[in-house]
Image 1 (cartoon, rainbow, N blue to C red):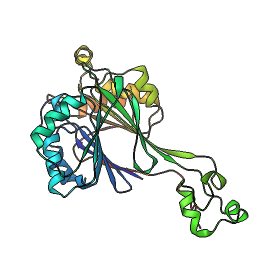
Image 2 (cartoon, rainbow, N blue to C red):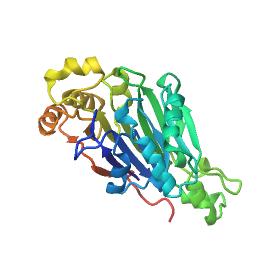
Image 3 (cartoon, helix red, strand yellow):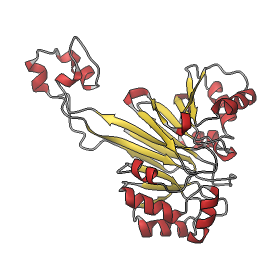
Length: 305
C-alpha cells in the first residue's frame, strides 16, 4: 500500500491556496518526498505527512520553486527530534545546492546522505524493496523525472513449505522475500505479481522516453503548467507541458490515473485545462494541495493462512 499526497501543485510563486511543487509518498511507515517548494513544511502539517518519517528527498532540479522550502523543512525535522540519516538526491549540481541549503538550515542532529544521478539517470534503492529510477526530463536546465516502483513477491505456497518441512514460524519471513533457516523465498513463492508504480514528471515537455517509462503506471503526476493549447510554444520555450499534452501522453502510455500539477500562477481556474486533458484522457484529474490517494496491490489474497 502506498499513500500519495500532493503537498504543492503550483509553479513559480505560491498563491494563498496553492503551495509550490511537492509530492509525498508513504509506505510501511516511511516517507518519500519529491521536490520541496516554498510552503512544503506547512502543507505537510496540514495534510498529515509526518516529516519525522521522511527518509528520502528527490529534487527534480534546482529552480527555486522546487527547493526553496528545503532549509525550513530540514529545520522542522530537527525540531521533531529526527536522528536517522536522510538521503537527498538529484541531478548534477546537487553538492553546490546542498552546501548552500545546509548553511541556511544550520547544524542538524541527523546526517544528510547525498546521491547525484549522473547525467540525470540512475537507480536508488529504498527501504522495503522499493526503488527509484531517474531519467532526464525535457527542461531548460538538468532535470530528472522519477519512477517509483514497489515490487510485489509471488504468492506464498503453503503446500511447498510443508513438503520442504519449513517451520511455520519462518513462513512470514520467506513471504517477505528474506531467507530464513537455510531456506530461500524462491522455494516457496510463485511468480512475482504486479506491484505499484508512480511517476513524477514535472518541469518537462512530453518525450518518447517519458511515455515509455509511464507505460501502465498506477499514477502519473505530470507537469500541466499551461491550461491553454495556445501556450504550447511558450511551453516548448521554457520546458513545460500544456494540460492537453499531459492528457495525450497519459493516453498514449495507458496510465491508470493522471494528476495534473505544477500550474502556472496565471492559472486561477483549473477547469479549462482539465477539460482539455480529459478530451485526450477522460480519467484526468486536476491536482490541488492536499489531494490524496491510497494505492493498494491488486488481488491481495491471503498468502499466510
